[in-house]
Length: 250
Ligand code: ADP
Ligand code: MN
Image (cartoon, rainbow, N blue to C red; front, side, top):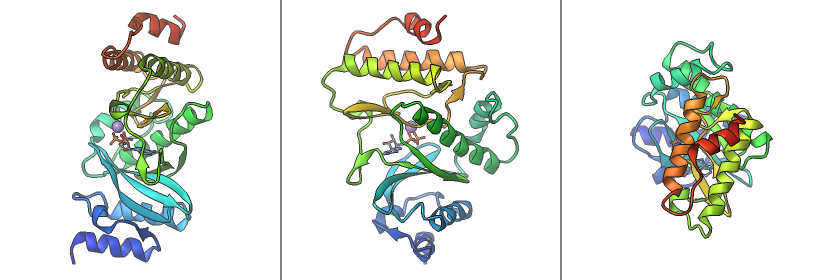
């Protein structure tokens, strides 16, 4: 019996349906002991009823399709072994909500998962289109699935856009509301971390920081530069300094 069969067996023993057995067998150590315990907790609380195939295998996390009864969900699992926890530590240290977090690799990654949940919640509460966060446990974050019939909405870079100027302005408006209302800077904004279906959605907010983070101003500038770099190929863009002034009111 290989590791994947063991995983499938243990997950099925929890009463979770595995929708696509082959694709759950992702290579690497996503499903270590810690992750299985976290999954078990979430299943026990009836927050997960089915796990499907992987949607994405990123540098730090894997995202799986899942279901909670009739609802489609996204299951984001931060990998304990491969996540770049040194970089994470720096983002956490400057953020008052998490500045006391220190210590082990596991501890940092659990804090990071909670941080992404909190960031999504703050953005969601002020009405910015982001996936609604549903729950977290250890290194696993559950959020509403942005997509339909098991198919995620495309990333901005792959989306069919009619009016680039309008989408550009919409994203600038999100950045401004994120800053003014949620008091956050995304800090990793790109055509990869925006999904598009009828309107843009911001995703991937683990690294987003509160405005009191010493690097928040630099992260804001980097986000605007990224957005301008991408959109300059498709439409007129605004001056970076003018955008920053409008957002920060300085
Ligand atoms: P990473 O840290 O690996 O970049 P992301 O949060 O950006 O993780 O997610 C990676 C990819 O998974 C996204 O580009 C998107 O395609 C998909 N994804 C993430 N969250 C959702 C969601 N809530 N609904 C649908 N797809 C999602
Ligand atoms: Mn991402």
